[in-house]
Length: 88
Image (cartoon, rainbow, N blue to C red; front, side):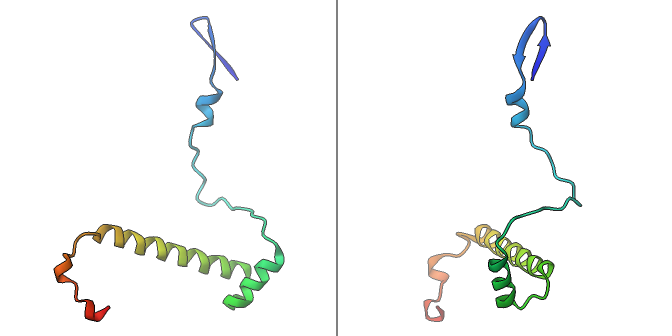
């Protein structure tokens, strides 16, 4: 893709390739997962539908990310002398 500016021709494709596009909030995703792998995970997690499994996995991942953020926020807040290693 080329654009003319003051009689100069330059390539604007690299500019567009780094542009971030936001995904609509209601846009759905399609992923390819082997059915045997999906069914095995559904049995293990006792999920009745694929949607139930995906919702549970997303909730667990959000919880994990939140706990990691809390750990990062509180890192260094406790002095070594305040730690009671008998409880560990």
